[in-house]
Amino acid sequence: GTDVEIAEGKYGWAPPGQKHLVLGHESLGRVIDPGPSSGLKKGDLVVGIVRRPDPVPCPNCAVGEWDMCRNGLYTERGIKEIHGFMSEYWRIEPEYVIKVDPSLGMLGVLLEPSSVVAKALEQVGLIGRRSFWEPKTALITGAGPVGLLAALFAKLFGLEVHVLDRVVGGPKAELVRELGGTYHSGSVKDLGFEPDTIIECTGVGQVIGESIQKIGANGIVCLAGIGHGGAATSATIADVASSAVLRNNVIVGSVNANKKHWYRASQYLARADRKWLAKLITRVEKPENFMNALQRKPDDIKVVIQFSEI
Image (cartoon, rainbow, N blue to C red; front, side, top):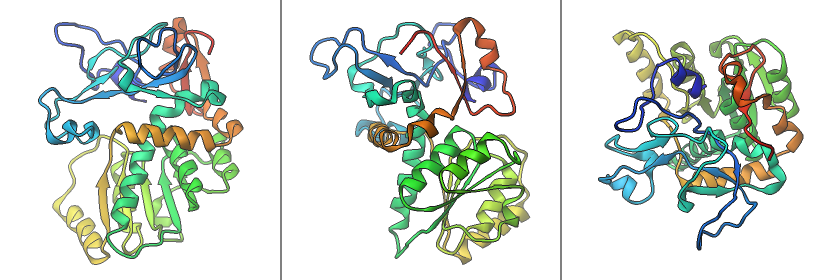
């Protein structure tokens, strides 16, 4: 989805002094030359971390929390001022490499969206410790790659999982059911329960507003989706704020991930059912057919451009 929006010109920044940006912030490769003393060996399956700390650096970047950068001077492979991984060969600093369980094979390409989910769930867990909190139900809004991986990880944590998406049926609904979760289509406000936590992955204003008003007492809404919408009225904002205040709710935004989240995500993926993960990759395209990859189809979940055999 991010690559599609960059290709449409909605955002993205070329490296300084250049007029083009090589895409590819999600990656998977096999090591050809590990370099000296890198902890890697030839043949390792690896993924490249996307973000780099700002050069100042701000206090958070200085301690390795570049996902929490305070001054916005960070850079990102394939998104912001650094070329991405979309090529037959790519080079990366050893400290920004994450090894992938070799049994995952091609499925290791799911590690980048998984790292975002790992951070979002960590944020929810940390905030939950402000009081006695035993969450039982999680609602994930949006059944794209991030939403479905959030459902997977929430299930690994023992939560009762519900996923809501605008699509009525199809492969997304079936994937949720295979997890043992419940799939919903329609409106958040029509759900017959109040979730303990909501991971919001759509970025749609109406869904966000309904989620904040639907969350249970002491619950946490984590906003992980980025959308575009019109200006909200002061009355709407006041209603949402009143709902949050009176029920001790927390609304937190979460974006990107740092190295610990990448590592945890790799562990979660290693525990997941391979047949289920494989169904997230709905299409594989060759580089010469890249335009097909940028055209979304109704049943698409994750589309991969594959340069060579893994």
